[in-house]
Image 1 (cartoon, helix red, strand yellow):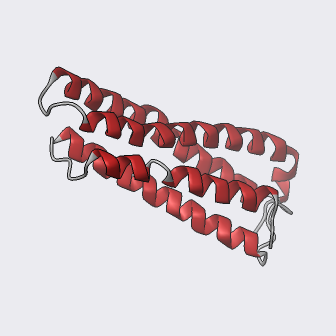
Image 2 (image 1 turned 90 degrees about the vertical axis):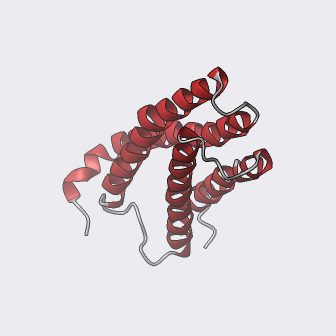
Length: 150
């Protein structure tokens, strides 16, 4: 299903989608890095309290709204005639990577809550490694959308 009336707005939808994705990715790159640093401070310390505030504000004020607006403008683009070839392999690969990004977002939200309750279960090294996940997913998504290799 596409909506013909969206055609004149395609460039606007795309511009707002790209800006939203950039904000979402900036937050997704930074939040796990905050977790790395949060692991280095003592539980109950003033520094730990500061990290809790930073992590909560980043997730609630930047990452969540950016994800929602990315999804909103992405759906508008998908509903625009000619934007997507539903049978192309790149589209399915991009959607799989996007689902991975949503899952990672959810994990970050859960980890933030664990830190908030002083119940973090993972070492610093874990967050250093998972910090690379959104980068890899973003690379797959960009290659699928721009190059469309299959």
